[in-house]
Length: 121
Image (tube, rainbow, N blue to C red):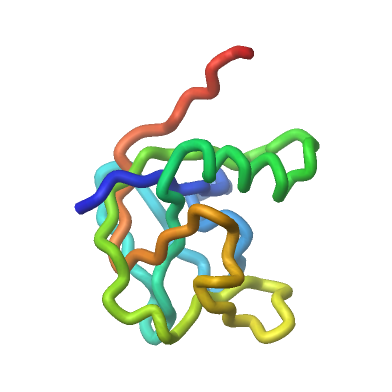
């Protein structure tokens, strides 16, 4: 397993994939191995904390990040990246790795280890 960073959203019943809604969304919990839904492409993680922070900053465009959080994680790199990943609202629903935010790594398994606490500037 490789160390990375996962951006998630806190909802009433747990932590979920950031952005993705509905049947493609994956639920996460600390210490629990998560994998894509049946028939879906790989999960997305970031290779560095800076890449994850950049994603949160640009996705929320400087607004309050609300319920988004960054977690350290361990992941197994995706074996088959040909399926692409689902993004709600994307013109074709599934996009390839080249179209994802800089620093995105595709994974077959992701385990959250601990929340990254933002350091005061």
